[in-house]
Image (cartoon, rainbow, N blue to C red; front, side, top):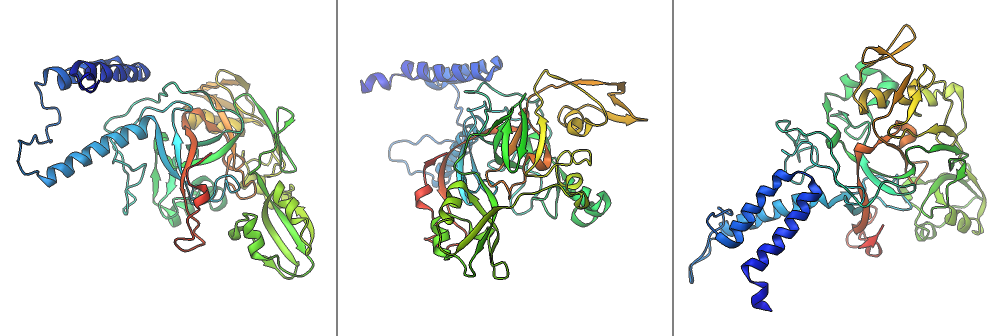
Length: 447
């Protein structure tokens, strides 16, 4: 059996089968020429394809530097291949998914769940997404550019999936505050002030935007509405999700709740503080189970949802809430109804609903959009309707009152979807010192 497994024809057949399967999946049959390399590598051996690798004679001293070079090249090639087509590492930087995914969780994101995207700019610094370490400069080159294309995956994005995607507003980044939303700053402070104080600007293409992770609450074709912080899709209330939490006011009889008890309930200490004048906690993030547990505490007098209600004097809808128009008096807790665009569907356009679809038409789908004397023009032609070129999704964080999501920047295009978190392979708590900061119970936990 050992002799059979080491037979050159058997090994050539195995590698050829795997390579053919990959080429068929890739859909680019020019790569079939690679079978010549595999044949020569295993059968004829006329060309030394691994030219940097030294073949040692019996008793010859090994060159340590060449061995390290061989290992490094092998690691770069294998890890890059795996990152492009199968799995990508990702770290949770904020508490927007708190209750389900914690700040400090390190994830493996599966790309075959929805199909991996072919690299649009393949000339890029290895293991770096968009910014060079230390300098923050551009990590990719535009010498080679490809159109967007996604390979076949196991399925499509479904409601309640946790999804990793490119930040829709991440095409323009403020170099002095890269994590900020440029467009929100412009609405608040104006374009000139924002760019003068937080610039210069960095422009990032679709495939090099920062990655976010949220829960998809509505898919293409759905109608979503939020009433008193409760999500409704197509008129039906969203099924309960254990990790979803909102902000509550927790009043006590005058004493603070024991911090150790709050820690046992997994309540993030960064997101609450005791106010003796209340007395209690003005904002405490809680899920349904935590609300029920706190209600049984002897010093808790009242637990009340911090519901955002519309206030015209605050200009919140116009400045913060998508679609940033006074015609849509929505808040994060009372939002919609809003229809999620689907590929091939047609919408009747008018000046009232144009704010909902303006960015889709002009940015995500690359058309020239103008409004001249009250008339909508797309690519110079008067237009009263529009046919969508791709599917869109509505994303929300499970930490509903501390999440910048689709309520603040709108729809997520299908071509921004990266993958689905599969496993938490490591997790640390920044509030604790080593080794107590390692969350052992979360290691190798499936999402």
